[in-house]
Image (cartoon, rainbow, N blue to C red; front, side, top):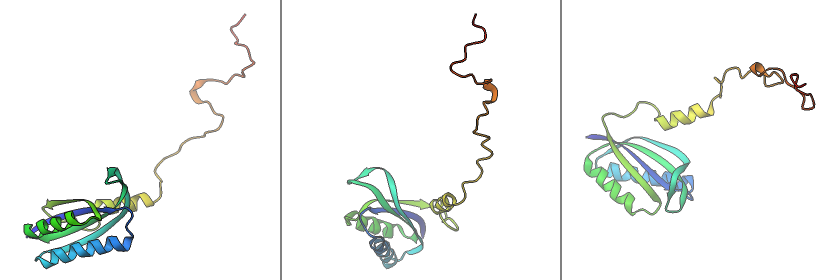
Length: 144
């Protein structure tokens, strides 16, 4: 059997329970046709790059699938009929990633400490290499 990564985008106005029901429906389709869902990840409500069917955001769900090509064809056919799914994409992979996907690792990294910015230096009155500061009313020293 072949390995696939399948990502679908659900409408922004759906509740999380409805998105989970869509993922469960996809799981039932795959398992009913002899495939197996290895992992399911919900990436949450995210802003999309451009409007799709008047949606500016979408719920992202990723499924790692182990199954025959006929299973994927039927899954995509069912998703194309569903009005709650605005986009989907299936990619065949050589092997599934161990652990969380790159999107989940990115979310964990973003939530962590924002350290690593280094010393920003003193933002006070030190003017550095620009020389001494003159008052506005002070005349230039070279003026005669």
